[in-house]
Length: 460
Ligand code: PLP
Image (cartoon, rainbow, N blue to C red; front, side, top):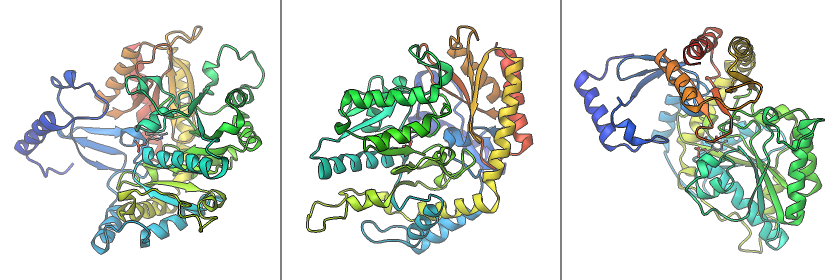
């Protein structure tokens, strides 16, 4: 780490942080008596804090974002060059990086046709929900307006996204929610619902969606919104046969399939988009995080030509367009960063690396499961892996949440940042989460799982 800040500068930053910053996702009372952690610098897979301590980042910036790793000068330069040429222009005018990135992106998404720019995953999902509602008004007299979402999935932090959010721990205390969002059951085979009595769980779990559609009335359901692999809900990989059946159901009832690729998108699972693992044809895809690896804010809502056509088919109707704007969806830094991010993934063969390193990570986690009975289930796709911790393999009762956090803390003390999902949901799964940058090497993967091995040994 370079020593650009001296000790006085650093203690000033620490005090300013403690005094003025309202941090995401933490309780501030206990934080008052602990040392804030300021991350000063990052390079490749590693970051350094204000004390000069090195951390191997196994969660890509904490929330599955920094897919190409830290310190990418070529992305910083692409953004700089673009910003001094033109930083911003909104509305119907185009921009060079906006046009070129959409062309490149669609090249990776056969069957998809249009890119709508905005800033965050939540915003992209909101816009998809708005499109569904507008289509319901335009085509179905407002009737086909309901949006189905799945238990344990997460689609963002706004009130509508939380209305479509299947994680009770995130939703508590922010209601009342927006009407018209309906939950369908999760598809975590390890925690199959009690009424599953055998057979193919994937098909059974998808059939539960059909049951909800029939209960609600197919003529009232406009869209189904799903993560390809559920992220924060516990790294839930879909069971065999699930997606095929989901696709059939959507077709049968004329329901738009909206896939949330905010985490899985742009290489995380070893293919460009998570849905491509399952041969699915979506109508709408949303993405954010890894699109520019955190070098600039950018999110996209991508639709088929068919969806796009519904908003332009009758120009004599002055209301017939998507009446929506995103101020910073006109900022050029996002697509400039995204273009270079995608070039890096291609030129450095990071999809292949993701598959190879994902396999290594899964192998290491399975080996840990043989050694530590607290690991009840191992799940993953590409460099997106989870190890669910249980108090007992027989009962599958979740491991004590405080101990799960102690494992995360122990790894942190060893200089390895890992994640854990599903805090504070009584009776639900506590899953250690690993999503290193797509540049991870075999040594990095081994260092991560060695740290977990030691932490599990000490905590359980
Ligand atoms: N969708 C998924 C699957 C996510 O995991 C997240 C954030 O973690 C979001 C949407 C929301 O994205 P953002 O935080 O950029 O609004």
